[in-house]
Amino acid sequence: MAAEPSSIHEQHEIERMHATFRAQRAAFEAAPMPDARSRRADLARLKDALIAHRDAFAEAVRLDFGGRSRHETLAELLGSVQGIRYARRHLRGWMRPSRRQAGLLLATTRCRVVYQPKGVIGVIVPWNYPVFLAIGPLTCALAAGNRVMLKMSESAPATAELMRTMLADAFDEDQVGVVLGEIDTGRAFSALPFDHLLFTGSTEIGKEVMRAAAENLTPVTLELGGKSPTIIAPDVPMKMAAERICFGKALNAGQTCVAPDYVLCPEQRVDEFVREFSAAFSAMYPDLLRNEDYTSVVNERQWSRLQAYLEEARAGGAEIIVLNPDGEAPETATRRMPIHLIRGARPEMRVMREEIFGPILPIVPYRTLDEALAYINSRPRPLAINLFDRDRKRSQRVLDATHSGGVCVNDAITHFIAEDLPVGGIGDSGMGHYHAYEGFLTFSHHKAVLSRPLINTAKVLYAPHGGWLQNLLYRLFLR
Image (cartoon, rainbow, N blue to C red; front, side, top):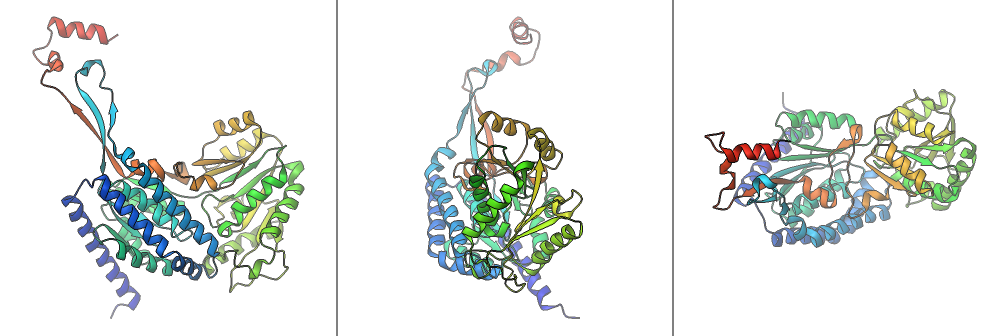
């Protein structure tokens, strides 16, 4: 029986992927240490290509989502371009070997760490920010002097095709290659013997990627998600907090890995939060269902998942507050889903157990800060914590008492795009870092180099043992 066309296409993509990997491996072996000039030229070429294709990317991402704010995609491009500029500006300093101390036992030697490209880097790109989360790791990997293969998401096919076209025009495929394809291709990609593999996506798929990488002892960076809490202090101005939380939640319709997943609000201020959040959302999106500034849920599968969360919560007695300023019923066809605030959700509900990744925001009342901190610490470590508090001592206590990939104080999600801050999870929300200098370090091998002069002071440690100088050495240092 002949294979289905989709299977034939998938097999062709896998064969093409293997050929690209072999070509990149050979190219790296031929030129294993690109100089700063060539790396900066690569980054400039990437920047120019992105700027030239900005309108095309805005349209491609809109098509993939069935409705995605042009301005949100331009913000993706802006963050990507600024990241490239930052890397180019600091690259020579990053590449410079760092001097290290040898210690008294090796007093005459010189020690340094050389930052050497790892080789061929694999990057698995998610659908929610298909430009920023492709270009960010690519920027770091090119800055570190590597060859790179990107596996684009099958849930954003138009963007994936455009990314392949753009990068094929800007780079030879033995330097930067783009892989399309669906689940089988993704699994085959994870199984390649990369020198480093970066995955951004769900915790469950991250476990599969890590298992596949382990077969090759490939080091991995996992940028996962989880339930990122937002804490509102008892005396913070609620209008300010609600507006900033609304921005972070409404951006990309909540389909952001560091978006506020639930709000810990002082119990006596919950009504105030609902009122101020509703006002902020209405001001930002007054005609929600026809508003091109508001992004759709990406596909029917994600829409159905979010609706199931709401149905379970409603059936379990939770109060659902729909923020729909124009009052029109949302259509499944457009998938523009209003933000739904939830009061009274119970811990066993899916909306409180699973990452929401959409425009649903449960409110969890608390009485004391200790209670709020205990609530966070009794759950898997989140990718982000958003904290709204003007009291520095209390804020420091939250920073000291919790673990998360990152923290935003008096803002939501924006730490993710700060030029010089690393991005990285902890525990269920991931491992490792990329972005900025930490991204350069992630994709570099830190080679330790020790140089000894002709005079060999370490000869005192050679056999035969037991001489007076060797014994003196032990008496001086073994105490």
